[in-house]
Amino acid sequence: MLVQVVLIGGIFYFLLIRPQRQEQKRHREMVAALQKGDQVSTVGGLVGEIVALRDDTVTLKSGQAQVVVERGKVARRLNAPAEEK
Picture 1 (spheres, rainbow, N blue to C red):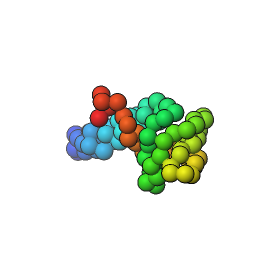
Picture 2 (cartoon, one colour):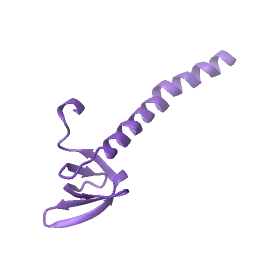
Picture 3 (cartoon, rainbow, N blue to C red):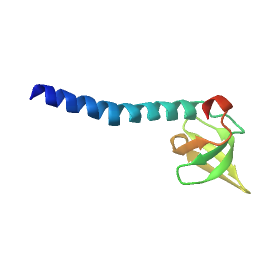
Picture 4 (spheres, rainbow, N blue to C red):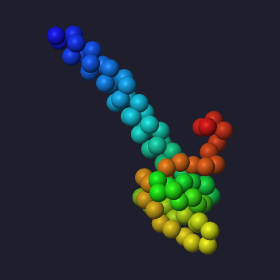
């Protein structure tokens, strides 16, 4: 019985918990590495160029508008270096 519980726990760890933690780590590293001039896409689908960075916010220029969003809401960098793709 104990072996089955440990086996199920191991399966949950390797199939659910570990991949989610790796994705969270990758996202934190990407957000920390953002620079002025990067093209980014937000969780809400807004695409723009970073014009200013602060501790917890990013100012994006999208078309003629400038929008301030939280750093954590940046989903991905569109002009990522070749080694990250």
